[in-house]
Length: 262
Image (tube, rainbow, N blue to C red; front, side):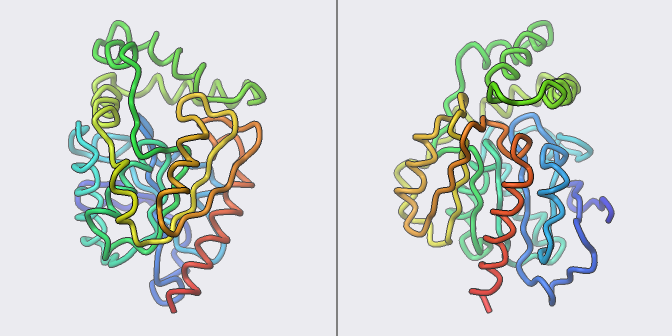
């Protein structure tokens, strides 16, 4: 396992024994606003039988570059990164803002999209005016982070998981999170979902306060070849709250995509 860099993007490779020949279509994990590859827990980053790569978006984690204010710009960066390391097609799996990026890749780079995994995301991602304003200033960033942590997890989430997430959030530059929220707020592909040809797996928590379950249902009902998996009592940080369950569902989906592509 290692973390190489290509085209300015730092990324985690799950298992170097899985080659393009043994797992021809890799799964690429794309984190959400203000995140990095570690927002995907180990269970999800290391899926048996699959070649999994988890990226740090530009200006996030250990990647260089700037935080963009348009989802399409992040999608373009990932398309260029994928080409630079020889990925012709991928299963793009995105959480929240990462899901918006995955949807954009499917629409703008369909030949590079073998399938989609859409985790706690939506066809449009409006951000509250309070968070847009609070993340625009360093002095109010702690208040914004506190609010996000209140909204991000279900009530059943263990306190140690909340504490760890809050620590990661405190390490994010306010300008990066603000730009991400601007990008999310401008994003809307509600009227284009019917154009997506790739199969999609929609994963959503029933207790998601930031992106309600109805948004996941909308994706599943409007993407032609989509299925929905609902996780009871899980919130917006679904993959952190239910790592084993999410990893198993994604592994089954990824293996099926590999098999059907042969």
